[in-house]
Length: 269
Ligand code: NAD
Image 1 (cartoon, rainbow, N blue to C red):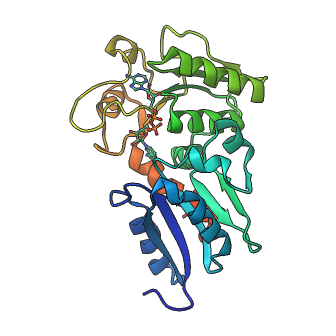
Image 2 (tube, protein in one colour):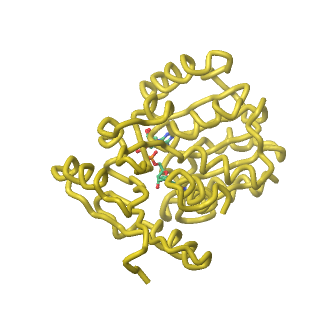
Image 3 (cartoon, rainbow, N blue to C red):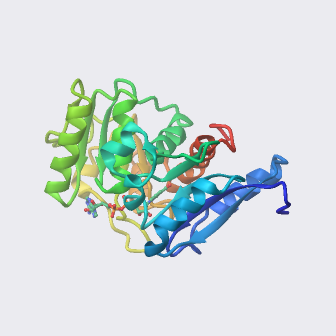
């Protein structure tokens, strides 16, 4: 129940009815007896500046998760952002400091790694392929580099997007082998689909079947797509003997990253 003493966090986007964060957070707050609640906020774009002014003055609000379509537009309007948010020009969470300053970060990639650690995947020294270099793919790629991968390959239908992400990452992480062609998946410790391919019931694979047949059982194969839970890629990878990580695993693991950043949950939940 929301009381006078309840502290609030929000999730802002438009539309908002489809998001799962309020259920995930409010269930966790209730189970752990915390006097905190998450509210979903469907905000129109022209009101964003007024919304940020309200957040700065909102003393019982600890922070706000940011979702589509405001991840990019809000990244330039906060009082401070993390190095990776500045590089990727994107935020998915805002913390309100006690003095009202708003600080942003993007933790999609950290949520992905949080889930991967549960499969005993430590990025340090590993070779990874990320398919899809949009919002989620670039955040995962950045976090893999921060986690110390030795090699990172990126694939996307847009060659221009791949090149600009590679250039940004090479500048931030000059010691890592970034980009480059690959003829087989056998050398990768991690293959992750960070594109929407496989969503719904299209049955589509994000990579050619002939390439997927080169997967080796030592690789972790992950998908960010949340529905279906077992995408065509993950079903294929299982048949090849690989460990798989689903989109819902990443979404759930990220609750800890988002909540920890806002100061309302521990990192591991
Ligand atoms: P986006 O539109 O920013 O980027 C998608 C990228 O995929 C684009 O660059 C596009 O060119 C590329 N792409 C499309 N088809 C491709 C193909 N066949 N091969 C290679 N690249 C291809 O989207 P986004 O915000 O990065 O979201 C991507 C997916 O992640 C969505 O399905 C979204 O639902 C999902 N998502 C999952 C979580 C989670 O926690 N599991 C969180 C956020 C988003």
